[in-house]
Image (cartoon, rainbow, N blue to C red; front, side, top):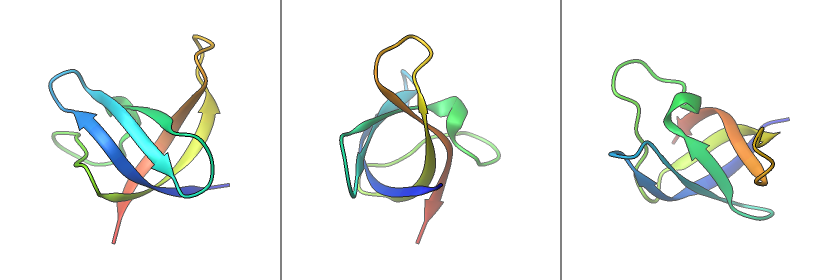
Length: 70
């Protein structure tokens, strides 16, 4: 089930950041999870829709299938 949140911060140079969920803890986001063509980055304050997976490294939650909305 898709979730909705706001980009808390995203470092385009390093290719990762965090999404503040509308409900729940912050979620890690990697540039490879962004569903767009061309250069993949997010900006602070953008509203996004995404799925949540467990981080394969065992470090909490990770966003997948991230799409900018609005």
